[in-house]
Image (cartoon, rainbow, N blue to C red; front, side, top):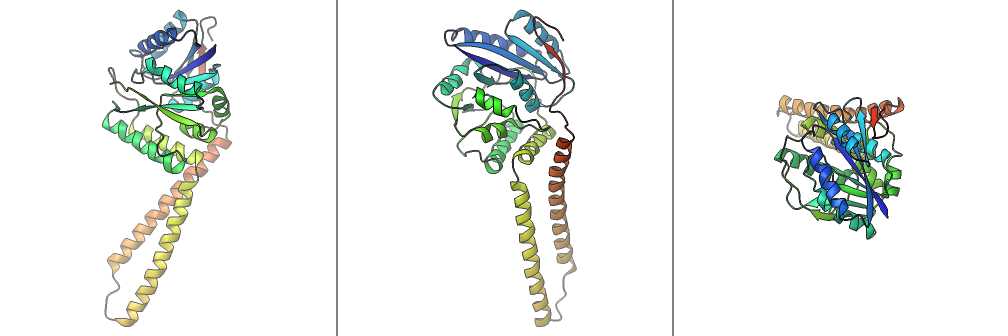
Length: 313
């Protein structure tokens, strides 16, 4: 019998987390002849009573472990902490708000049984807000062009992976984890299964524009140098255009001496090129800054306490 480990990052989920756990329990009971299971709940320093709910769930279950962060580190750091606590041959990651249907986890587990190394849930109709859907779209395109994600592969927060994939992922110790990038660099045997996506019944998404922007930056600075290559290509292109325009200006001056040189066009070119240079320097600085932080061993997360039924720390 194989063991399945569920990892759930928790933030502002005091009203939804209990229902998610109940759904996992009911679903896994129907597959108890195939799988045993454990659940790891990671409290990402939630400002509500999520931690108390986790403690209550740990007390009432024999197979739940809780982790409490000292401060908010973000969803991907919470996933990494949860992955390091798991013991199962299969590991399933899902959300704490009930939008990812735990009762359809059998589809993901069946795909792993059939030979896939990683399985992502694919939604025909997403129930997120327009803002969150835009963020998902941008995340998809970034993963496709910068991380080599196949165009037809849909990635989401609801996924399952084999043990060897988790073992490779948790070797990553830098301060800016990006789970999708870690999966993509580990294996190419990744498939999709179709599941339903539910409406959010309580609360709103914890992702703000700033958090989504940080997520995108994490993705391409941690796992790709393509932005630097794009900056180099743009710099070469601008330099070539500048040289050609300079030759054109000189020839025009000799052919038509009375034509004014054009102060406005010159200033526009200077502002444009100067802006591009600042953008490229900022991009390079982002890489260097993250290298500096990683060299200083900045942690992915800090655990205040682990919560188990038999032991309180």
